[in-house]
Length: 252
Image 1 (cartoon, rainbow, N blue to C red):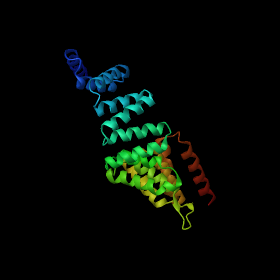
Image 2: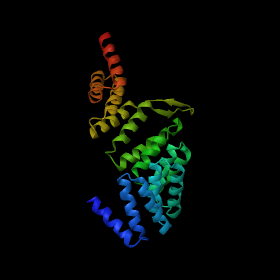
Image 3: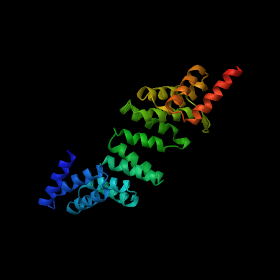
Image 4: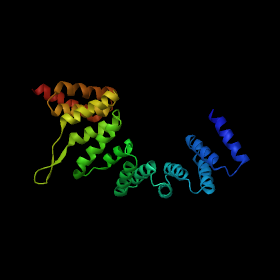
Protein backbone atom coordinates (compact mmCIF):
# COMPACT_ATOMS: atom_id res chain seq x y z
CA UNK A 1 0.00 0.00 0.00
CA UNK A 2 2.73 2.50 0.99
CA UNK A 3 4.64 1.66 -2.16
CA UNK A 4 1.58 2.63 -4.18
CA UNK A 5 1.24 5.87 -2.19
CA UNK A 6 4.87 6.71 -2.88
CA UNK A 7 4.55 5.80 -6.55
CA UNK A 8 1.59 8.14 -7.06
CA UNK A 9 3.18 11.00 -5.12
CA UNK A 10 6.33 10.68 -7.22
CA UNK A 11 4.22 10.62 -10.38
CA UNK A 12 2.36 13.76 -9.26
CA UNK A 13 5.70 15.51 -8.82
CA UNK A 14 6.94 14.21 -12.19
CA UNK A 15 3.89 15.76 -13.85
CA UNK A 16 4.09 18.99 -11.82
CA UNK A 17 7.49 19.60 -10.20
CA UNK A 18 6.08 22.66 -8.39
CA UNK A 19 3.34 20.67 -6.59
CA UNK A 20 4.18 21.70 -3.02
CA UNK A 21 1.65 19.45 -1.27
CA UNK A 22 2.95 16.40 -3.13
CA UNK A 23 6.53 17.17 -2.09
CA UNK A 24 5.34 17.64 1.50
CA UNK A 25 3.41 14.36 1.68
CA UNK A 26 6.26 12.48 0.02
CA UNK A 27 8.73 13.96 2.51
CA UNK A 28 6.58 12.79 5.43
CA UNK A 29 6.30 9.31 3.93
CA UNK A 30 10.08 9.15 3.49
CA UNK A 31 10.55 10.18 7.14
CA UNK A 32 8.38 7.22 8.17
CA UNK A 33 10.72 5.05 6.10
CA UNK A 34 13.72 6.73 7.82
CA UNK A 35 14.98 7.86 4.44
CA UNK A 36 15.97 11.21 5.91
CA UNK A 37 18.32 12.32 3.16
CA UNK A 38 15.65 12.07 0.46
CA UNK A 39 12.94 13.45 2.77
CA UNK A 40 15.09 16.50 3.41
CA UNK A 41 15.25 17.32 -0.30
CA UNK A 42 11.47 17.22 -0.57
CA UNK A 43 10.93 19.38 2.52
CA UNK A 44 13.40 21.90 1.12
CA UNK A 45 11.54 21.89 -2.19
CA UNK A 46 8.21 22.33 -0.39
CA UNK A 47 9.51 25.42 1.40
CA UNK A 48 11.10 26.75 -1.78
CA UNK A 49 7.71 26.57 -3.53
CA UNK A 50 5.67 27.83 -0.56
CA UNK A 51 7.69 29.74 2.02
CA UNK A 52 4.61 30.68 4.08
CA UNK A 53 3.47 27.22 5.14
CA UNK A 54 4.04 26.80 8.90
CA UNK A 55 3.46 23.05 8.90
CA UNK A 56 6.26 22.49 6.35
CA UNK A 57 8.79 24.30 8.55
CA UNK A 58 7.51 22.38 11.57
CA UNK A 59 7.85 18.92 10.03
CA UNK A 60 11.22 19.80 8.54
CA UNK A 61 12.31 20.95 12.01
CA UNK A 62 11.31 17.54 13.42
CA UNK A 63 13.43 15.82 10.78
CA UNK A 64 16.39 18.09 11.50
CA UNK A 65 16.07 17.36 15.21
CA UNK A 66 16.03 13.62 14.46
CA UNK A 67 19.34 13.88 12.58
CA UNK A 68 20.88 16.09 15.32
CA UNK A 69 21.01 19.33 13.33
CA UNK A 70 19.75 21.15 16.40
CA UNK A 71 20.42 24.76 15.53
CA UNK A 72 18.84 24.44 12.11
CA UNK A 73 15.92 22.62 13.72
CA UNK A 74 15.50 25.51 16.17
CA UNK A 75 15.44 27.99 13.28
CA UNK A 76 12.68 26.06 11.52
CA UNK A 77 10.55 25.70 14.67
CA UNK A 78 10.87 29.45 15.18
CA UNK A 79 9.90 30.09 11.57
CA UNK A 80 6.81 27.91 11.98
CA UNK A 81 5.86 29.90 15.09
CA UNK A 82 6.51 33.18 13.30
CA UNK A 83 4.05 32.09 10.59
CA UNK A 84 1.48 30.70 13.04
CA UNK A 85 1.67 32.06 16.57
CA UNK A 86 -1.04 29.60 17.71
CA UNK A 87 0.94 26.52 16.64
CA UNK A 88 0.95 24.67 19.98
CA UNK A 89 2.96 21.67 18.77
CA UNK A 90 5.69 23.95 17.42
CA UNK A 91 6.08 25.56 20.86
CA UNK A 92 5.98 22.10 22.46
CA UNK A 93 8.61 20.49 20.26
CA UNK A 94 10.81 23.57 20.44
CA UNK A 95 10.54 23.25 24.21
CA UNK A 96 11.70 19.62 24.04
CA UNK A 97 14.58 20.58 21.75
CA UNK A 98 15.67 23.32 24.16
CA UNK A 99 15.56 20.81 27.03
CA UNK A 100 17.96 18.61 25.07
CA UNK A 101 20.18 21.66 24.55
CA UNK A 102 19.96 22.38 28.32
CA UNK A 103 18.44 25.80 27.70
CA UNK A 104 15.94 25.16 30.45
CA UNK A 105 14.48 28.61 30.96
CA UNK A 106 13.64 29.02 27.28
CA UNK A 107 12.35 25.44 27.23
CA UNK A 108 10.03 26.28 30.11
CA UNK A 109 8.79 29.41 28.32
CA UNK A 110 7.92 27.45 25.18
CA UNK A 111 6.20 24.63 27.03
CA UNK A 112 4.15 27.20 28.94
CA UNK A 113 3.25 28.86 25.64
CA UNK A 114 2.08 25.50 24.29
CA UNK A 115 -0.30 25.17 27.25
CA UNK A 116 -1.48 28.77 26.78
CA UNK A 117 -2.37 28.06 23.15
CA UNK A 118 -3.79 24.58 23.77
CA UNK A 119 -5.12 24.09 27.29
CA UNK A 120 -5.58 20.36 26.60
CA UNK A 121 -1.98 19.72 25.54
CA UNK A 122 -1.34 16.83 27.92
CA UNK A 123 2.29 16.27 26.96
CA UNK A 124 3.14 19.94 27.39
CA UNK A 125 1.85 19.96 30.98
CA UNK A 126 3.66 16.68 31.68
CA UNK A 127 7.01 17.78 30.27
CA UNK A 128 6.70 21.15 31.95
CA UNK A 129 6.17 19.37 35.27
CA UNK A 130 9.26 17.22 34.71
CA UNK A 131 11.27 20.33 33.94
CA UNK A 132 10.29 22.02 37.23
CA UNK A 133 12.86 20.34 39.47
CA UNK A 134 13.77 23.19 41.83
CA UNK A 135 12.32 22.79 45.35
CA UNK A 136 10.49 26.10 45.10
CA UNK A 137 8.70 24.78 41.99
CA UNK A 138 7.20 21.79 43.84
CA UNK A 139 3.62 23.08 43.87
CA UNK A 140 3.71 24.17 40.23
CA UNK A 141 5.14 20.81 39.15
CA UNK A 142 2.41 19.03 41.11
CA UNK A 143 -0.23 21.24 39.51
CA UNK A 144 1.03 20.46 36.00
CA UNK A 145 1.09 16.69 36.62
CA UNK A 146 -2.46 16.88 37.98
CA UNK A 147 -3.60 18.90 34.96
CA UNK A 148 -2.13 16.27 32.62
CA UNK A 149 -3.95 13.57 34.60
CA UNK A 150 -7.21 15.54 34.57
CA UNK A 151 -7.00 15.61 30.77
CA UNK A 152 -5.96 11.96 30.47
CA UNK A 153 -6.65 9.87 33.55
CA UNK A 154 -4.76 6.91 32.03
CA UNK A 155 -1.53 8.82 31.51
CA UNK A 156 0.68 6.25 33.20
CA UNK A 157 3.91 8.21 33.35
CA UNK A 158 2.19 11.31 34.74
CA UNK A 159 0.88 9.21 37.64
CA UNK A 160 4.33 7.67 38.12
CA UNK A 161 6.31 10.91 38.17
CA UNK A 162 3.72 12.63 40.35
CA UNK A 163 4.13 9.70 42.72
CA UNK A 164 7.89 10.26 42.77
CA UNK A 165 7.41 13.97 43.40
CA UNK A 166 5.08 13.28 46.34
CA UNK A 167 7.37 10.54 47.67
CA UNK A 168 10.19 13.08 48.01
CA UNK A 169 7.84 15.81 49.16
CA UNK A 170 8.82 19.45 49.57
CA UNK A 171 6.75 22.27 50.98
CA UNK A 172 7.13 25.72 52.46
CA UNK A 173 7.39 25.89 56.23
CA UNK A 174 5.71 28.73 58.11
CA UNK A 175 8.88 30.80 58.22
CA UNK A 176 9.42 30.35 54.48
CA UNK A 177 12.05 27.65 54.85
CA UNK A 178 11.78 24.76 52.40
CA UNK A 179 11.37 21.49 54.27
CA UNK A 180 10.88 17.93 53.11
CA UNK A 181 7.54 16.39 53.95
CA UNK A 182 6.84 13.23 51.98
CA UNK A 183 3.23 12.52 51.06
CA UNK A 184 3.40 8.75 51.14
CA UNK A 185 -0.35 8.23 50.85
CA UNK A 186 -0.53 10.48 47.78
CA UNK A 187 2.50 8.78 46.26
CA UNK A 188 0.98 5.37 46.96
CA UNK A 189 -2.22 6.35 45.17
CA UNK A 190 -0.41 7.41 41.99
CA UNK A 191 2.07 4.52 41.91
CA UNK A 192 -0.87 2.14 42.26
CA UNK A 193 -2.70 3.93 39.46
CA UNK A 194 0.36 3.57 37.21
CA UNK A 195 0.37 -0.16 37.97
CA UNK A 196 -3.37 -0.42 37.28
CA UNK A 197 -2.69 1.08 33.86
CA UNK A 198 0.42 -1.02 33.19
CA UNK A 199 0.79 -4.08 35.42
CA UNK A 200 4.35 -4.82 34.26
CA UNK A 201 5.71 -1.37 35.20
CA UNK A 202 8.66 -2.50 37.32
CA UNK A 203 9.67 0.97 38.54
CA UNK A 204 6.15 1.69 39.77
CA UNK A 205 6.12 -1.59 41.75
CA UNK A 206 9.52 -0.72 43.23
CA UNK A 207 8.55 2.80 44.25
CA UNK A 208 5.21 1.63 45.61
CA UNK A 209 7.11 -0.90 47.72
CA UNK A 210 9.36 1.89 49.04
CA UNK A 211 6.45 4.07 50.17
CA UNK A 212 4.59 1.07 51.64
CA UNK A 213 7.71 0.13 53.59
CA UNK A 214 7.99 3.72 54.83
CA UNK A 215 4.42 3.37 56.16
CA UNK A 216 5.34 0.06 57.84
CA UNK A 217 3.12 -1.97 55.49
CA UNK A 218 5.80 -4.63 55.33
CA UNK A 219 3.93 -7.52 53.69
CA UNK A 220 2.58 -5.35 50.89
CA UNK A 221 6.00 -3.79 50.39
CA UNK A 222 7.61 -7.21 50.15
CA UNK A 223 5.04 -8.26 47.55
CA UNK A 224 5.71 -5.26 45.33
CA UNK A 225 9.50 -5.61 45.61
CA UNK A 226 8.99 -9.20 44.43
CA UNK A 227 6.75 -8.03 41.60
CA UNK A 228 9.44 -5.58 40.45
CA UNK A 229 12.03 -8.36 40.47
CA UNK A 230 9.75 -10.82 38.67
CA UNK A 231 9.26 -8.25 35.93
CA UNK A 232 12.94 -7.26 35.80
CA UNK A 233 15.34 -9.66 37.48
CA UNK A 234 18.21 -7.23 36.84
CA UNK A 235 16.63 -4.53 39.03
CA UNK A 236 19.49 -4.09 41.52
CA UNK A 237 17.75 -1.60 43.81
CA UNK A 238 14.73 -3.88 44.13
CA UNK A 239 16.93 -6.83 45.13
CA UNK A 240 18.85 -4.62 47.59
CA UNK A 241 15.82 -3.12 49.32
CA UNK A 242 14.03 -6.45 49.46
CA UNK A 243 17.13 -7.90 51.14
CA UNK A 244 17.07 -5.09 53.73
CA UNK A 245 13.36 -5.65 54.34
CA UNK A 246 13.82 -9.42 54.80
CA UNK A 247 16.77 -8.83 57.10
CA UNK A 248 14.71 -6.43 59.23
CA UNK A 249 11.85 -8.95 59.38
CA UNK A 250 14.20 -11.65 60.60
CA UNK A 251 15.59 -9.40 63.35
CA UNK A 252 12.12 -8.47 64.59
